[in-house]
Length: 230
Figure 1 (cartoon, one colour):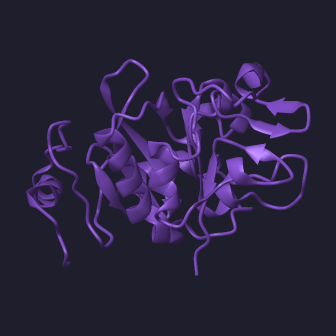
Figure 2: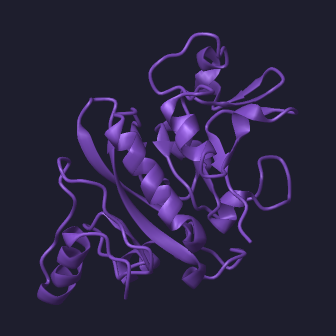
């Protein structure tokens, strides 16, 4: 294993050996690994999916219809600033080719104190995108079709992330999803949690080659970021 950036990753490795749990305290600098590293559910970083998480998602977000293998996915533990202005840790599952991007994006947003209300696996909401959005949960991987279509969503491949869905709804004509977010369909006035072109969240994703649903032409999916993989 190479390219370990600092002592936290070593600490995470030692925790695996000793059975202790370690994670990045809010005052510590950004840390990650550039290769797959066994990651517990208390470490901050990214790596292969722990057995406990694999068991948790099987049959919910990961199903026989999932178009990628479990080994194609990575478990990412991030820290973020909540709407309560306090530091929190959250978890995501993304395609392994995007795990480094995702960890660094959330670390950048944490450093800039960009508000994100929740970061939980979609499985906490029974794999329901509607329930996750209603809870204003930011999430990534989930095996599902595009709303109203048969084609699989990019979330099914782990290559899409939704951020603060209540403040950043999907707008198609007069239809707003989630329905409780109609007041946020008006993007002229920026409010807490809203993603606006040129803000910290937009820039963190865009400079790493992600596209934003807020710039789509046929509809506007303000919560949605995605990135193609080779």
